[in-house]
Length: 241
Image 1 (tube, rainbow, N blue to C red):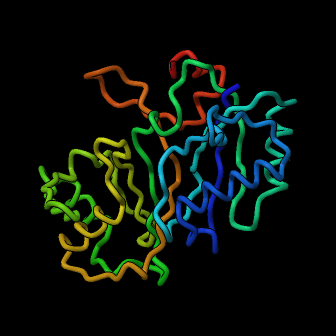
Image 2: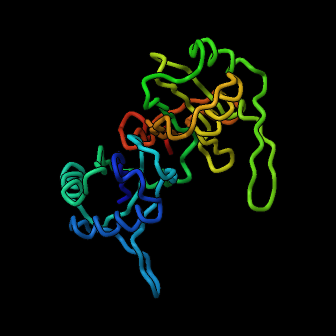
């Protein structure tokens, strides 16, 4: 059976990188006594797929991983067993069974939502609500991305599906998180600060990934984002195939 696990990552665990999180879950699954399926071959490993790596320093309430199991009793029992093997800063939020035809978590990711919250009470941006609206109203938001091998020119506007300010201290956004057009929330915030003429150090705010989505819309149709966990529910299984 294919199992989709949703978990939260917070506190001191936000400083643990993706590869170490993979090793942590491999050990936790063994400690929990999960009858996980292993790959064949000379060096067998647990069959596991994470939806999207989370940057170091970011917290999350919407992380996903898929595993395959040979057997289990109930999803609730599996959830309790895994939570019993977790450390402070990682919590299993839900466990669901996936139809065999559903793509794995990594291949399913289309978008993600984030909250950027000021640690000092409010962002140092004048009239934040109006400024964010004006920022998003731009026809293009050019961004220069430097890699080890090249310099890439991007238009962030194409991958920002929603951005808004709430209570003057929290910035919410939904952005492209697919492998073909992944946009980091820090990139959007950097351009927002540049637009507003404000200098806000990265240490002044906390980024939290709220949810990770797949897109149920057909080619050429408007986006229809649903959480990756929706593919485990009876209501959405047929549409997630």
